[in-house]
Amino acid sequence: MATEKVFPMTKEGKEKLEQELEYLKSVKRKEVVERIKTARGFGDLSENSEYDAAKDEQAFVEARIATLENMIRNAKIIEEDAENSSVVSLGKSVTFVELPDGDEETYTIVGSAEADPFEGKISNDSPIAKSLMGKQIGDEVVVQTPGGEMSVKIVTIK
Image (cartoon, rainbow, N blue to C red; front, side, top):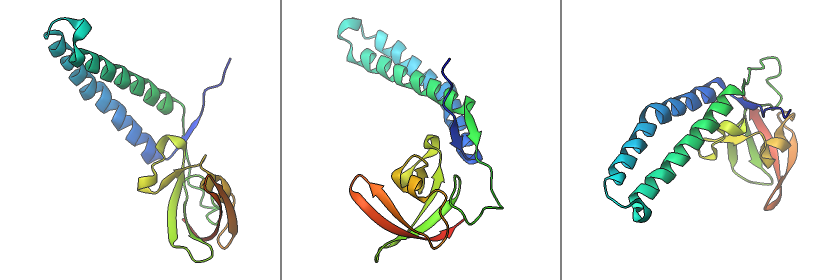
């Protein structure tokens, strides 16, 4: 029997997924059903692009609902590790400077389920996070990226 994938995430990340799931089930699902009903009224379903589009959207919504339910069911909440606040780990925000003279960047390392680089949240599976995990303030780390190597120095960990 295959084991289910565990999705590490913050409590806030799980709540966000639960809200999205509730929206899809209570609002979006009903909207799509209405679109399908309306499109059926346009006649011949074999040449009805509105019907096809609505059915495609329905498939997408149902697949997303199933994905969210699985992620929530297999969520593992990241606990705050107050004892190890000086070590980069899941759930921590890390500020680093690209060497030799790059800008300061701050990212929070989260599970893949809630990663959003535009909000400064990177997946623990990303090259940057993998390289930073277990490191401490002041450590210089070489990060393997698709564009090549980059060196960074860890400035703060929160």
